[in-house]
Length: 115
Image (cartoon, rainbow, N blue to C red; front, side):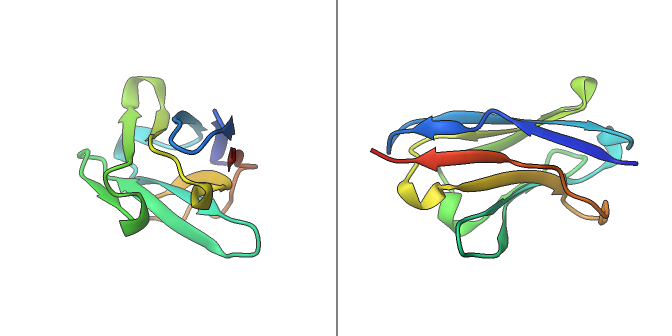
């Protein structure tokens, strides 16, 4: 019973920043590759970034240089620092496995970038 609770979203202006958090339970967090995903209006869910158990990171091209994924294993928490936000970043953001399928998704957190 993996539980993933995303938080930290909100309304920001273009060029602004947000930090998203994902509190994870029901898994050996320190052993799990984790990822952030997003789903924009009218679009499918897409991978934003991943971080492995050894802290190796990978990013989608559309966020490279702007977003930073990190994890705090002591707190079982995944983070996504989002800088230089653009209107195209508007989406519901979810955390989940970056590898093995957890089989379920949380509610996500809404990020809206607008003037």
